[in-house]
Length: 119
Image (cartoon, rainbow, N blue to C red):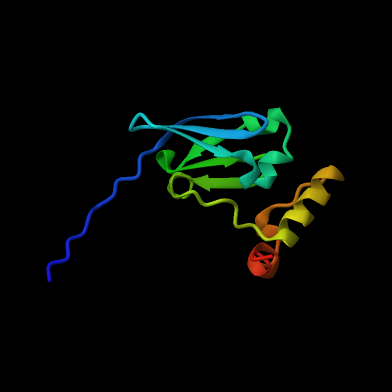
């Protein structure tokens, strides 16, 4: 039996736009990805100003929203993976945001970040 492998090249993100219900990413190979904003609760609960404050990271391998402490990979977007943040972590972040405080993922325990992700 012959097994062959295929090397997959992940294109880089070149541009990002966020509407009230969609995240669109322009890729270096000419494709445009469009995914539901509902997959990323931090973006859903962000102001348009916060959504527009993004930066490419890893030479376009990912997108970061510094005001929201949110990072997404192009590979994850292509694979159709929604946020894996736990409900507890998101709740803590949202409560802090509504109170005008900042909570970074690095401030949370591993259990808060991932522990109840399946709920």
